[in-house]
Length: 214
Image 1 (cartoon, rainbow, N blue to C red):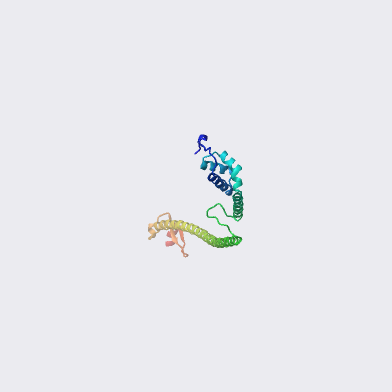
Image 2 (image 1 turned 90 degrees about the vertical axis):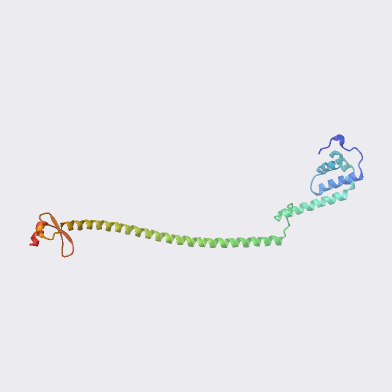
C-alpha cells in the first residue's frame, strides 16, 4: 500500500535501518534486478520514500557494504553463466526440476534417441512389408473375383439360351402331340410331324403322310 508523504519517517537513519536497506538492495543486485527496485522495496519496509533510500544508499550504505556488494555481483555473474550454460545444453535453469547435463549424458541421451528411431524404422519397414503382402493378396482375390464373375455371366447367358431353346422345344412337342394321329383315317388336312431315322422332328403334309401310310 502506498504511504502518504506526511506519514513517511523524517527521523535519522539507524544502524538497523542501514542494515535493512543494504539487505534489500544487495538481494536485488544478486538476483539481477535493479537498485531502483531495491529502493522501492526498502521504502515499503522502512516507511521512507524511495528517494530517501536511494540517497542514503549512495551517501553512506554503499561504502559500508562494498564487500557484500562485490560478492553479490559475483553471484549474479555466476548465476547468469549457469543459466546460459543450461540453455546451451538444452536445459531450463529457471525451471524448479531443471538439471545440468554433462556431455556424457547428452551423448547417452542421443544414443537412446537413435536406438528408439531405429526401432521405429524397423517397425515401419515390417508394416510396409505386411501392407505389400495384403495388397498382393487383395489383387489375387480381385482377379479371381473378376474371373468368376465372367464365368457366371457366361453360364447365365448359356442358361438363358438353353431355357429359350427348351421353351421352343416344348412348344414344338406340344404342337406335334396335337398333330400326332394313331389312325390315318382321322387325318383330313393340314400338317403333321414325324421323327425321321436320325431322330429329327420334321413336318409333313397330311396328304403325304396318308400316302406313306398306304
